[in-house]
Image 1 (cartoon, rainbow, N blue to C red):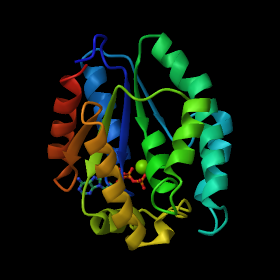
Image 2 (spheres, rainbow, N blue to C red):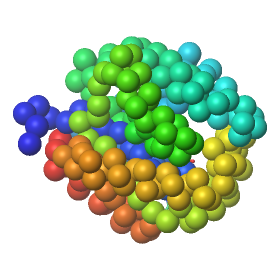
Image 3 (cartoon, protein in one colour):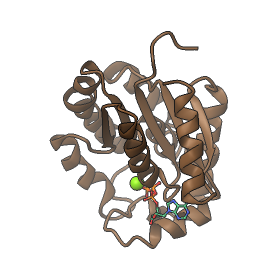
Image 4 (tube, rainbow, N blue to C red):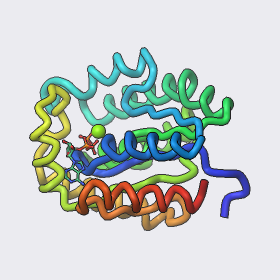
Length: 208
Ligand SMILES: Nc1ncnc2c1ncn2[C@@H]1O[C@H](COP(=O)(O)OP(=O)(O)OP(=O)(O)O)[C@@H](O)[C@H]1O
Ligand SMILES: [Mg+2]
């Protein structure tokens, strides 16, 4: 058990698994209990990082190589950490971050070639911190993909890689959770929104 209360919480999972929906519900639930909460997201979460977000999430699937993508995501994360996450943690807030380095480990590290050690080395060099708790929203990726596709946004570069990749990514996330069971809570995201929200709050309360 951690000696200080968990403050830096990340939400991870395949496209359409409900991370953004649940992060909003979680923020409201925690604020209702008197916590000060910062909800942020990746890629993005600071002005510069949001500009990088547009570069990585829009356009053709082959717009960037996996290597270039790792550099862009890490640059965005560094800016986000310096300008948004660290100041909020220093002010005693609970930070809820919709995707963080586990998404880079899975998307760039596992799913397109074997770049996991590159992701980890760059992370150690430029970011150097992990979440206190990572909520993994696990579900059948074909359902997630159809949920995500129903939303109609221009940020579909990764969704356009298709179902086969999403299946690999789900397995990648579960592998990370197995390797670090003390950091991860795996949530069954195939349930209805309210049940997922209640499971999520329960997992967070166990460490807060
Ligand atoms: N438990 C649920 N059951 C049914 N629909 C859901 C559930 N959770 C979320 N949705 C719907 O599915 C869609 C995708 O949800 P959401 O945007 O929260 O997923 P996400 O994990 O943030 O996706 P992305 O990885 O693409 O950002 C939304 O339209 C949302 O309303
Ligand atoms: Mg989202």
